[in-house]
Image (cartoon, rainbow, N blue to C red; front, side, top):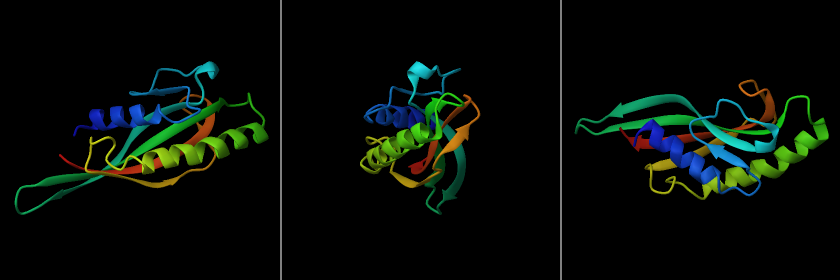
Length: 136
């Protein structure tokens, strides 16, 4: 599958998480506070494997980010509560979709960042690292 198809599948699955207001692909130009918590995807690094039989496989990481509040507009306890609520829900949703609804061969949750600043939107949230194996 293409990177675009994989990112679109991630957004569709992310939209099913209880509490996510917006899940988009590609990432939006901006995210207003009324659209948070918002889930979006950034493409990460990849490795390639070519077998002697001509099969090509790609293992790529995707950074599934969730913006929970604009920076400076929520107190630390509010941010922490939102992340503690959403992080296990997002994690469980992707664990339950190991082929991203038959889009890829295998998607594995590698881990998460905990609370981080998301400079692209001036927001606070977290990142889930998703490793995807697929034919290319």
